[in-house]
Image 1 (cartoon, helix red, strand yellow):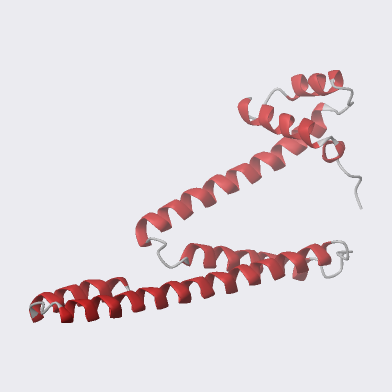
Image 2 (cartoon, one colour):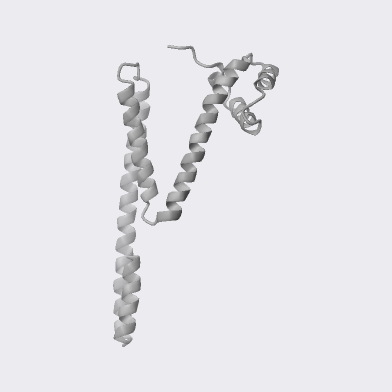
Length: 172
């Protein structure tokens, strides 16, 4: 097992600042970053920062692409029923499964508790979202019933009642 990167051992605030500087510097000037870290009391080579920077840049790019795709999907199909959230939950579950399959031979004992907690939270989020959608639908249906009752007692024109019903049921 390779040694842990010295960058992962940096204090959170310093690592966050390094990440910020990598982004604002266009993922370049690794020598300057190495000198800056030396000034902060950490001896980290230019090549170590370069390796970290390449991985970090790839992650940033993946997030940027995923964000653009999500925006395009929502713009195209909308997200009235939480479809994006459901898709995200399924994607994370699939990625977790892939990690477990690919690392069957490796020592993943330290990952299992964290992944178990993550899957449990995702499952709970999925159940909560479905419960919320069911509750919203029931409330909307009850509102439709109430409106229809009130409109009937008002002796509303049947054609107007039909239009209101169609519009409301379109929402429900």
